[in-house]
Image (cartoon, rainbow, N blue to C red; front, side):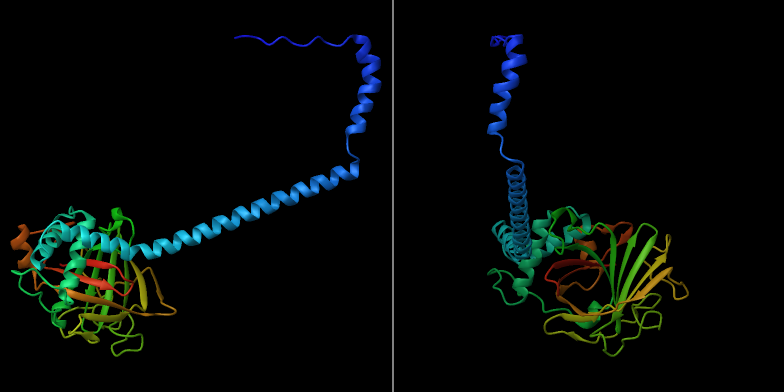
Length: 320
């Protein structure tokens, strides 16, 4: 590497005398007074704080804009999925069912295709035009068809495609008077339950009172569910109770009536929710004929159903 020649060093005499006098004096003359230096440091610190404040404000505004964009992206994502699905084949209920049954049977259909099939079926059922050779969509299911145990296979509540196939075993139990969301995480089951209808609706007994579809309750016989509109498929319910059970060997069976949760609480401010079913197949033979006896994590599955939650997401459910 080439070296740069250094300038000649001053003589010892210059360092001792001349540098001690004239050089130091010049440096002292160019240095601002002590008070001026303090003022300059204070001004620099103030400028730094202002820059930090401005940067924080920009980050907060950007974060708020990103959050607003994320909230607004769900309809855009659904529209894109619907367009992609419709452009790949005929817009018929039959094609939608083929994709949805395959998703329920294998959990391998691409999430965008599943979302597109659900959105298209809902559009067709709500009055969209089907193909020229396609029969019209069936009406929303009768209440008696819904009274069952449903496995929540797929949901667009999560914006992440990798999590739209629900990673835990989650069952939605619909009874004549009560509903329950039963989720298994390892050996523990979390049960969220409440009455069909609003918080003060008939049948609003708390968990453990013997009402249908609560923890330890019997969801049969399939009586017509209250607060269900068969014209639109809208089922309203309210979650009022949360409980956790140690239940490593119970499978998909309901929690026995004598079992006590190791933790439970009441929802402080329950709010009514809805699931609007735009189709639901009658039973297991439908999916067995299409897929050869589907299995989902060790439990047999039956006919599929599609619904939109009051939160806006689409869901694929399977009768178990």
